[in-house]
Length: 541
Image 1 (cartoon, rainbow, N blue to C red):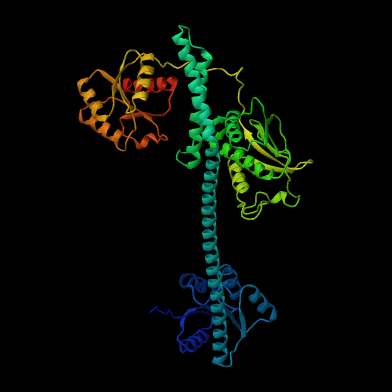
Image 2: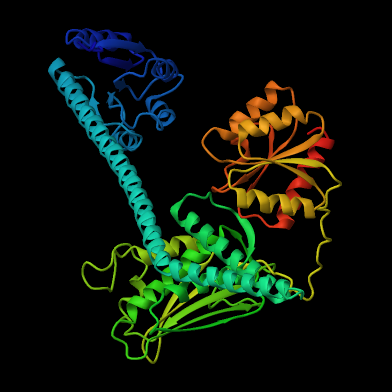
């Protein structure tokens, strides 16, 4: 059972007879009575014991009752105060009530019942106030808790929708990826046949055929990375990236996935600046807006989407105020569909609001898009077109970017080897042969192994002559097995990991893995990674 606390009453009066009488009356009701002969003593006892009720006389030496109430004005809001005085008039009673007194009794008190009635009434009122306050605080806590739960549920809902939206985008991309990869393979096959024909005829291969193979392979790599980003299989990369390059890549995806009867016009400035963030976020913004535009064009006779991107070097308060060191990049997506009403225009980014037919839209697409734009410190602006349709402007503060003509190109990195022996562990014979050919071209002497077991044997037989091991991640545990074998043999050869999966954080790999590169890798990236690992070994890092 909870322990009940005795109600404490502090009596402050300079008349010892009145204090004793008051104590006798209150003690008979079970109250604990504290006594003080003046306001100073009463102030000390109040601060020391925090009584439940204060009974105070007004006329006292050292410190009178009004001064005591004034000194306690900040702490007696919930403590009932009864003023008992045989002197003074209405003015003093009003002053006492203004200073926090709850009731005013006049001496002499003719009956103990009068005092007890005033005390009970004051304590009941104080208990009611405390109960109401506790109830209010309880309600506030419940509201806060419920608000946190709703916020958490809302964030979870946004997260789930974002994942569903990404899956929807992946489905859209997948619809066009087969077409894109068939074109990529066709370009590679035709270009390779042209090169083979030139070699068979004793002629030099056409440089354009070689460059075409590289270009289309890089395009395929970009498509794969985009899908990995959207599925969450690749971690977010917050980097400085050129806006124009990401927009051009996204336009290729949009053109490959948009129905052929919809015309897409695009016009991008040459220099759009750069952003710091994840390039996929910018891709998602443009793809979401293009998808919305495609839905809005249903039933339009000559459907058309116009996508532009331009920069403003000055301050433009109508779009977005930028700091002096930034440029304003505005990406515009416009359609000639049926459009939306003037009343609906301000609501387009509200969660769960949609102008699509029932069961065709969640009303969260533009809401999520706006959140991504805000994460890039930008904003969305919607307007109706005079000829029909809607124009969406994505205003982003970007960092200036030097043009290709004026930019100072960095010096070419030292990527060539000096005859160092490299062990290549790769299960795919075609990839293994290609890597070894590249390493030979870069000035290294490659040795080949199909798996870890064969690679460890080669390390033991070539002890002291190998400079680096280049391996794939392969099956689960393969890299750990290789590094354990290296430690067992007391070899400190650095390992360069070429991963066909999304590159994990280097901190999660064994210490012997000095660098991780993602497949497919070109000769320049391979040469850089090799020199990085070699320099680490020379510096004993």
